[in-house]
Length: 521
Image (cartoon, rainbow, N blue to C red; front, side, top):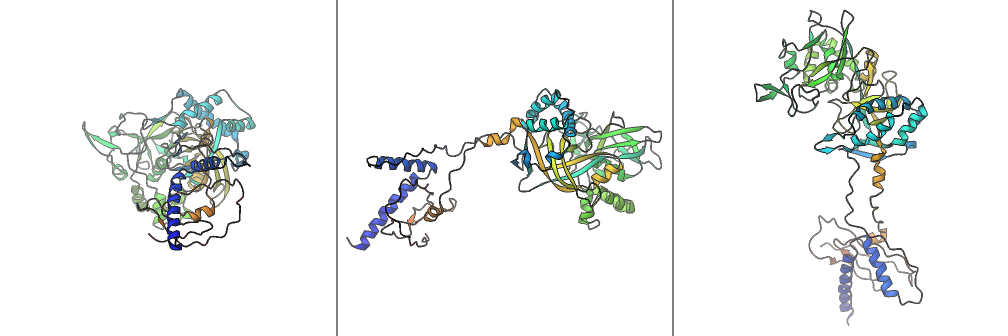
């Protein structure tokens, strides 16, 4: 046979064999098992048998879809060892335990019922019952035992927004303001309770708990609903004279910051006081006035604080009015029965703990969840970098607190708490403590491990093509065969074969293959 004809025949035969091999090897590790069976079938009559290799376990492809223990939308998480949690050993775990135990009183009172959202039980809510039941019987007074309690009942999980290395914190506090029970020339800024014509779909108008997100309507007659009044309309008197005034303040900036914080103490001339908590809002999204001042170049971002905003508003009353109305959201309050010794009540329904309570995104997290927050904050002074490594408990929420690693740190009541919290706008690392009943690493251990990656040599011999770009034409033979090594380059979407185990050394060393680039189809 002529050399040219012989080459064509060999090319055809090799292409056919390789295409058939591609089909056999398309199941990843199943191909490795097929190779072992092929060797045993064809070499069982040899005098010297190689040692038997253990068969690779067969995989179900695609990989099984195991349900996750819990899912937090838009978040990424990484299981940690306690030794990897920076600053964990140095915290006051007993103080954190007492705050967690206060949350547990509310959780235990629910009789183990998991919170429900969109018809599905939130797994994390139910799992907190176990550590809370354990805490119920442990009135700890020892720091080491409190630390052991968290380590024995929880697993640390680093959490952040998808694609971001850290979370973000701000601070809040309870303002203490001077006020009057009646309107005077000095005290003429009303603090309103919830109006009776404020309506939220799915809730009764006298419901004790209304959402702090979503549309809010003004009910006209029996059926007509229109958006509720915004801040400017309310300041202009749209709901005045209806008996909704709880008290009167002397500065609209005081009211704005009380609304931003969500609570306030108002002290009267006769020595009495009233405690106010968030009750409802008017349905408009919160707009940060500080961000507006930064965008307008009025206050540099690195100097922004609540005190800076107050100073600017005091010096620019006309600008302050326009700035307030840029935030169309408006908060309505309710009176709470608390003494001056008690802290403000959070959305979980229990008094907050200064330095240990945080507000989180209620749509993603569950009240009572511990978070270890680590980083540096300007606590000692405006430019200080005070180490902050503290276990905090989620007990509150806020309309501006959005995201999986976003928290508002509660610092207590009064001017000093206000100065500290007003300086906070900083990235921090978040470690969420997950009850061991939902340990994600235990679930991850059941996931199959991917097959070994092919060697670089095999990958070069069988280049891959993006399946989305692959054509329906059969693969074309693009290279020439070496008469000794019978190496052929295939162009097209051929699956990578799993290399056959090295059972015995080759009978002779292989020569280097001179390869040509694949021909374009």
